[in-house]
Every structure is written in C-alpha cells, then in structure tokens.
Image (tube, rainbow, N blue to C red):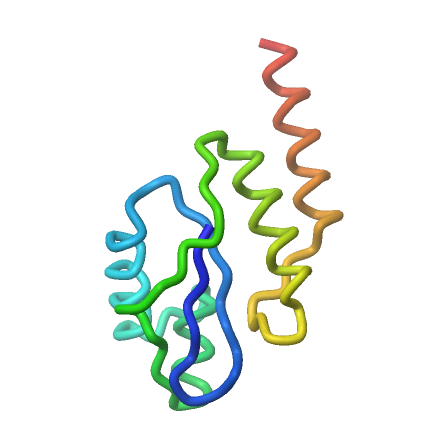
Length: 107
C-alpha cells in the first residue's frame, strides 16, 4: 500500500500494487498524461489542474496476498477518508472477497 500526496492541496491518493511502487508511479504518470477518467489520480490532477507528488510516494504497508492487500488498502483509505480522494467502500471489498473465496471452493 502506498500514498501519493497532491502538491497543490491536502488531498492524498491511497493505492495498492503487487508490483514495485516505482513502476506503479510510472503507470499513474501515463494515466495522468492520457487524462484517464477511470484512474482516480488522473481525474484529480486533470479536473483540478493539480500535480501529484509521484516521485515521493509513501509506502504505508506491505502485503503479498492480493485480497488482504485490497482490504488493507480499503482500511487505510477509510482511516484517511477526510484527505483521500479515492473513497472505497469496505462493504464492496468484503463482498468481492467473499465471492472470490466461493469461486475457489467450487473448483
């Protein structure tokens, strides 16, 4: 899990990746350049004409297991919800987590 601060306001993006954080920052940079409407950092930067501190991400936690990583991302986002511009529903993550476990049990 990592966070990216906005250079122009107090907002922060909290995300997770199974890859190196530097690679994820490069991906965010490309999405911002393309003004990708499906990428929260790109939407924040584009709509507000703000710059994100992509060269200064903060690693908040580490988790190898994907579902646990997604849940930790959700918890961290909820903890920092006043500043996070990527609100995530814990209920949604738990629902998908339970669905994934059900699929694995059926195989």
